[in-house]
Image (tube, rainbow, N blue to C red):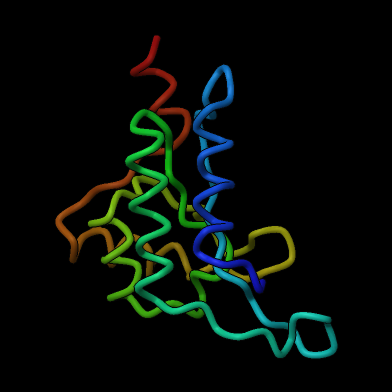
Length: 129
């Protein structure tokens, strides 16, 4: 959206210093939509996106770092790098507000290829009780 790496670090630092710290931090990759002010925005470098995920993980070790909007346009390899960098959650399902997500089958296949498994919010809450 035009922010710098420093802007992203500042925002993550603000989040990390909140009391209490956030339990969930969604990280979005801009979805360019024709006719909107950001339709021609400069594409965020994939490595900068992965660094953002890693920074969020380092600053907020207990938070769910969630891959959110923009996954439909991400290659599987980029999503895999994000998980290796510290993402530990994703928004799942075919729709994220107004933006499409990969299909549930695609997500489950990707997790399987990465040797990972998923859990639902309900399963996670049961473990915390």
